[in-house]
Length: 200
Image (cartoon, rainbow, N blue to C red; front, side, top):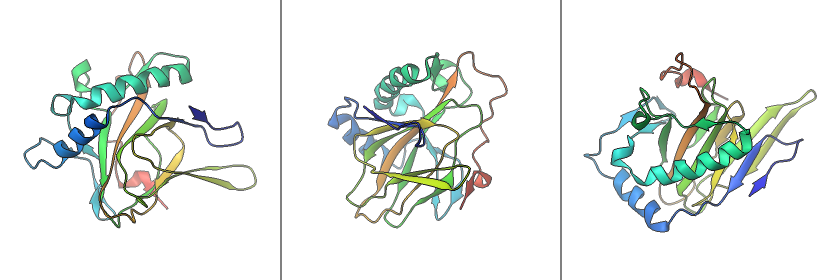
C-alpha cells in the first residue's frame, strides 16, 4: 500500500488480490449487448457511468469487499458502498468504458460520500492516467498517478480528479464506487451525477 503525504492530495494505492480470471470475465460480460445496463449521462462523446446490478456482475462483490476493508481502515469508521442487494434504492458503484480517444473531465464525487475509489479492470498501454488536484493558498496542486490494470486507488470524495485521453489501442475499463457512513442518510439522491458535476 502507498499513500500520499500530508502535503499531497489524499489518496491510497493498493494492488488487491483479484484473480486475473475475474477481470477477464468482467470484460466479456461488459461486451454483452443483452446485459441489463443503465447509464447516467452522455458527456464528451460517451456515456460516463454505466450501472449494472451485482447479480449480473458477481465478480464485483469481491472487489467491493476488499475495498471495504481498506476503506474502513482508512476512515476509522464503519462505511459501505450502498447497493440494491443491501436494500438500497440504487447502486453506488458503476463502470467506465473509455474508448481510444476518450477522456474524463475534472469532477468530484457525490456529496456526503466519505471515500471514493476506482479499480482498473483493463488499461491498455498509454490508456490514460488519473489526475488529482486541489487548491492551496498560493496555487493549484496537480498530481498524476498511473492507471494500471489490477490497481485500486481510494481517495477523498471531494478531491477533484480527471482521466487523461486514452491513447491506447483498446478500451480502458474501470469500476468506480462511493463509500458512505452507516447509518445511511435518507436524503441520498441518485441524480447527483449530471453534466454540472464536470468542469474544466
